[in-house]
Length: 390
Image (tube, rainbow, N blue to C red; front, side, top):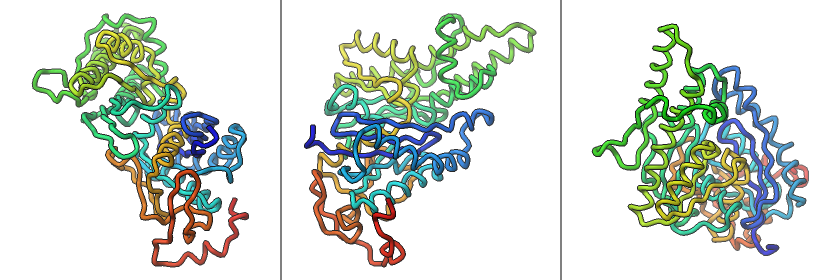
């Protein structure tokens, strides 16, 4: 274990400041500072509020993660950060912090993909990922089916939502039912007391001519909202628990059905489910039932690792170091629409090394050589002591 890469990961793609520390595939620390309560009164995430919350939480959360892991920042073999996709302002806070720490410590910097990180986090729960891995990622911003022959360099999109993501639909239906924000946990809780067969809501994109692996939840959301509206107009009581159960069943039915089909079509005998909605109890139980019937091994991380966290970023960063993937350059920037086909943002060898951006050392267990690749000067940075920066 001591020979495996020790990596700190920073995640700020949305409303949670996550910092994780991982050694190889072993989780040492997972510190999260959430701003969800600040967004609740608005009924959704406010980007500017999220960005300011990240600024305030960043340093304390990093310090908490290092203390929990029982390691010094100088012991790290690299620093990984979510470079995208996500909210641009929120991503910039994380990327800027990661660059500052990496420079001050003379460590290689890895800008990684948020979606690939959600897949890689399962290594912390169930060991190394099989290759290829079929992944169903379901969150407030994404509903995707991905095939990953190599999580560090080869992730292939098979299907994605064409409108609302599943988590987004949960939030919107919770708002119609006046259940508050976020909607996923409360609908999951109420659905356990309801009848999933009470109301038959539509299953989007499941016809014979529809895209086999794409998702659509906008029509379902509208159907549920109109059903509720009709009840209220008629002066009838809305059976909230039955609505929650029936809506939830429509979502997880489609998600699991398409995921199992993709596994069969691609000849993959493992299915990994990740993202915030993967914490949903009905999704987990139905996926297990259908995987058992199909002879497919299901891998789902514990709920805390399904939501956004720094551990998943550290896990992918550690894999980058282990496989000698090139570190990112110092001009790494946030990319709110970074495609999943880019698991990380490789550089030309400028970042990291014991001497910062001008160092030519090979660093740590990753064995990378980092030279200076920028033609312009950074005198305003070089005047600062790295001991003072950290």
